[in-house]
Length: 185
Image 1 (cartoon, rainbow, N blue to C red):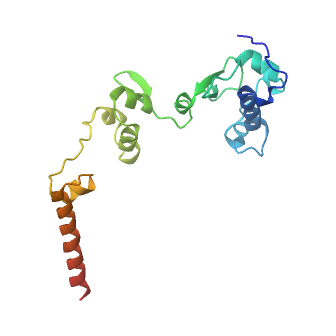
Image 2: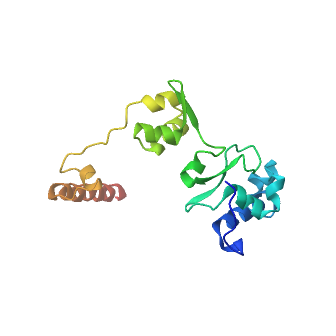
Image 3: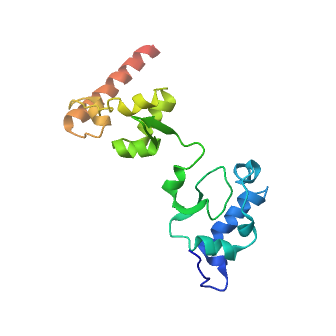
């Protein structure tokens, strides 16, 4: 994909900003990301470490909304291991990403959520907070939204503003105040 420079000074380009950020994470112990990159032994290939022109020739222009991603998080930054990726793609390639295998198919938790049409947080909550087996979390009955009867406090708190629900809310707080007045005496 070898591309030729289109500018005299690259410093105002997104590609240059990505190259500098990569170098900072891997080479500068004062960089906030150094502990996750340089301190872990993540290196930059010899062709890129001090040569932006070679980096540009290998990677080309950074597309809008994309960042530099290593395909293998344990390997160095190099032409064979890097690509331009969206933030969503980056999230699926973190060392903390949860992978789940179900029916012989392995996907990230976010990919399963998208595939099943359920919110990601619901699957994550089932597995991380409730300790549910990942395969069961994917197949368990979806949580059904609770319904309410008009004229109840629940109806009012869920957004219904009909006169019955308003009256129920008013009645609830009137009874609550009366019980707190009794307990004070």
